[in-house]
Amino acid sequence: MTVIDGTLKLDPEEARRVRQERLERVGRWLLPLAIMILAIWLWDRICVWNEIPQYILPRPGVVLQTLYNDAGLLFSSLLVTLRITFLSLALAVIGGVGLSVLFAQSKWVEMSFFPFAIVLQVTPIVAIFPLINIYVNNQTTKLLLCAWIVAFFPILSNTTLGLNSVDRNLRDLFKLNGATRWQQLRYLRLPAAMPYFLGGLKIAGGLSLIGAVVAEFVAGATGQSSGLASRIIEAGYRLNAPRLFAALFLISLTGILIFLVLSLISHLILRRWHESALKQER
Image (cartoon, rainbow, N blue to C red; front, side, top):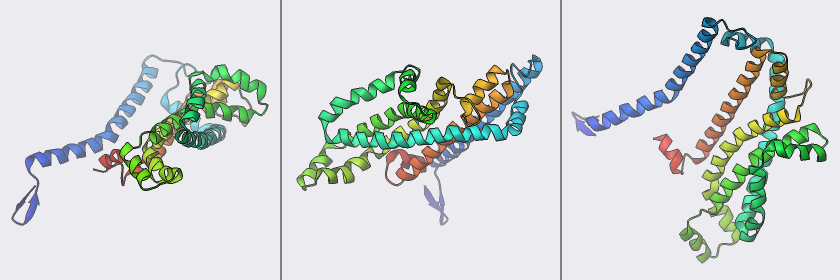
């Protein structure tokens, strides 16, 4: 950057870098939007060119019309799915962070109980559900438990990793100054683990939605108070492809919104001090 006639002017290299950053900021939103519009247009043209019946592959306009016509039914089911999703995510956060703190305080506890968390993670929920179905009578509790199992491990593993990744020199400095375990946890280990926890939270947010939908598929829940998965099953049985696609659209849109909201929360928390967020601010 140089000063000419009392005004600041960028040198060619700096100006090129600024232009590149502007293009990247625009392209980050414009390119995905353009590709999405192109994909929807191709979807519509394929249906027209091949004269595909509506019950096999509906045109995008038909799906939107169905979403409008069946809004009452679909959005009431969406609320049921969201309730299971957010409750399971909240329980995953409480349980995952609580256990992570316990693991950080005692290596013996971590070595004793962490393998059980891994077993829950690697065992397919469709294999666990028959046991849940035997021991749990309430339908909502069944769905909530299934979704919690799916969302729990990313919170636990990421937070535990963050708590155990504190700089050893800082830990020794706290000990030299007579800090208690609680003070080390509050002022050193928890802040250091925050980026790891938020990364796990973004993963768990999507998994909690997936867990809620898969749990309802496995449970075979039906009725007016059922979630979107039941609408997909029902539409499949009736060959009502437009409603099926409309329900899928709502699930996808919900997953995207959950990820964006959690990403925004993560950015707002970390933007003042963590390198990953500071780079996005530049």
